[in-house]
Length: 158
Image 1 (cartoon, rainbow, N blue to C red):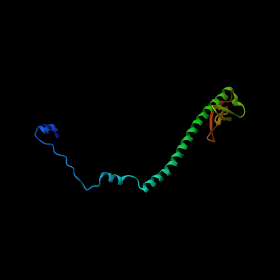
Image 2 (cartoon, helix red, strand yellow):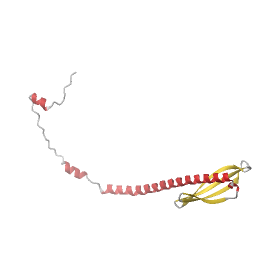
Image 3 (cartoon, helix red, strand yellow):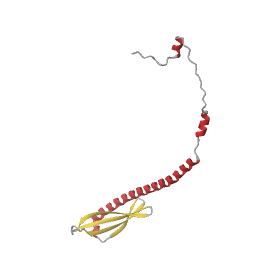
């Protein structure tokens, strides 16, 4: 099967003795392109008011969401620091044997922030020879205190 090109070049047409066909312009009754664009440009007052109403609802909700997310991130970060400090203090009290003293309190410094801690001991209900030792650290975040507690069991017979 042979294919013939659909569009022959002008050089081929001239060599074959054909004259190129002139380009014809048609006039239509449609409005000119410039006036059609002018009719479509811009927004109606109702569209602008609807957009403003939408923005008035969405922006405060988005800002509140960012505030909540920021606070949650700060609380999580500080609680992680509090848990680390409580675990360190608990290990220190057990190794030195100071956990056997009556309830203790104190402050511990981490960077520029200070945290208060408290030691509590109580008998463990499952075994009378064991004691439940808990260190509770108070974590301040944005004017509010959160509590982080770390506990372990210690053999009181030793």
